Length: 151
Length: 140
Image 1: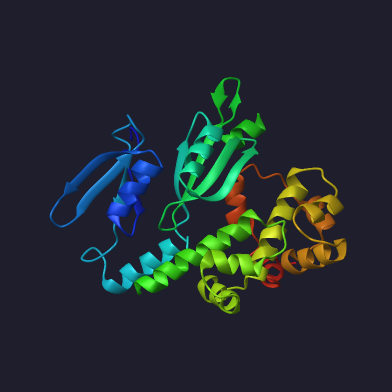
Image 2: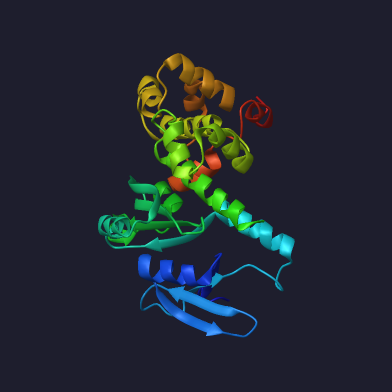
């Protein structure tokens, strides 16, 4: 029925600041940055993976009323938006050091688990981003940890 | 909400992340207040207003969550786990664990089933909801 995921979304409080962070700090690239008139369509993707875009959406009217906008902004700044984004890397230590040199805020430094080694960071607004180097078992990444445990 | 409130939330979140990272260390209010750019006198009250509980209680739940994880996922002794997660004495560890979870660490380990999920989820979702309330919701 489905062929893939082409778009996901993160609420950001300022799109210029978001673009700077997600591109210059995190290392993603701009997929689209269009002024649609009624909104700025700003999407980023892993370099070379256009077609799996993340919409950096600014909450606000007319899509939502002022009170709701306030609530959404409050949730973002309190870190209550949950697991916002998960990225994979082939070298977690190098990624960690690169991001550390760029003064990224870490929620977790490299930690090894059965599924791989990961780090946690915050974007400038409070969103939670996880980056993992998946462990390899028989040459295949752990894409389905519970199934892996059973076998 | 004013820009000032959003910025305060964000700074308090930065301090809360520091508590999560350094859960095995004693709560360092002067340092946390500095991270959040608020005065020491205001830090605890502001933390509570932002996240609904005191930093001390937030830390205790973090420690108990880590202890729950280690009790089920490792074979470390209860004394070692107590020290690993930042308690100074077995007495205060057992008491806090029991207050939060409703059973002793030993009982918890005996009852536990292995849960194979990433630890960022156990941190968020296995963290016991509160002191006392957990007992009634578990029906124990």
